Image (cartoon, rainbow, N blue to C red; front, top):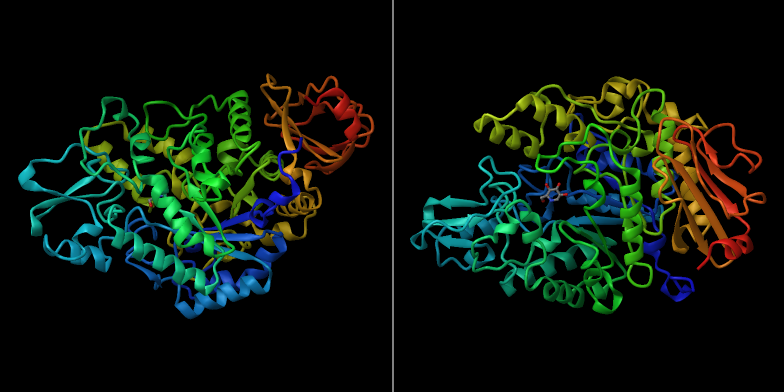
Length: 575
Ligand code: NOJ
């Protein structure tokens, strides 16, 4: 039976989401920082990609300790990005082109410069005090909580004014909001209504599994010392809050919601997204991006690369979670991760284009909504800074300082950051070969990758074989072949260490996808499938395959998407 009866069709299941980091996309006023008018000037580019939804990283008022993930006014626009009039024009421009817009909902924490926090820290009996988590110092030092971005890795900050500590899972300027307080929750829901009434089409929910906490703040159980992320996720009332948010806000609009599913495993995923639970629509997990990292070291990539078998097993396991219920997402990178080309493909000039196209083929042919990060369609790659001075990201800078104070190996850290640092994916978007890649006439806030002279939109527009045009073709194919959206996923040739092959099957259509993840020729073992009548729908090499007899030999990073005769698939493979 097919997993998705027609009555379960939803626009957000069939959508391709294009993620824009506004700070790095296009600067319209020469201050070196991307802005809303910059995005407006590129709406036709976005439209011509064929994407359906744009997700913007936070655009709200912020002192930018963490590039907008520290919000000081949830209903204001960050001054560097423009004004509310600019936002309204951007939303209109998107809707005019049939593109939906989703914003970032950052409500585990606010900025310490938010009015609520300024009030809260002013006295213990201030009405906003309980919008945040406090620990009175007369009760002693609070039990250890680790912090992501604190120089001392300490999530409790002592605040002199009221002789108390406040909680901040992220930087000292990102105090955690207290979801136990119904007044806080109401403020958040009102704010969500404010944006929905403006017409936005959904939210991506930042670290949402962290909003519920054990507010007695007991000793962290020993087993969580190395994995505090898991402990922070899924507090006791999380699903009560998400259900309430759905009832009070989300269910009243035709919108989509996607959780940043930090710490969420396959065993818990449906608790967020099973439709009958009336919480959220989708979540994106963190397991995939953890593949190929060394244990016990901060974001260190294994020099031997990653295991494709582990990769296949993991994505197959996640596909199975949503085979009968709920809906999945697929991504390989975003603003918190390096460029997908460097991490999962091959960024050498020889293989850049072909491997980048192969990765796009993976993302656009899985049974899940693809979240595709701007710049990956060009094959942008990691900038690989040599010096800490080039980094702007609080995560890298504070971890460097922390390790420095402990006398740890900083050169090894910097080596690792060349592969894994977040700033690698935040470098300015590469529009053309003019100064600063056409991103800005001023000095960009983060250096432009020097490869912009060859890797840029202008150069790729005219080339039918470019990664950019391949991405466009993939989107058109996904729209034409509903099997690529809803079709059942069947992994083939599981033990092949180089080639990832799978079937997508829906109604009368069977599509086979073969992806060579290696820099050498490799065989796909597809015994039992009758391939002679197969038709190539899309391939990432210019000289497309003609006959199917050679189908099982794939060139370096070759991606081949073929349509089979369904009857053959049923006879040979279907269970
Ligand atoms: C996840 C966001 O994606 C990341 O960029 C941010 O630093 C943290 N949450 C804190 O908001």
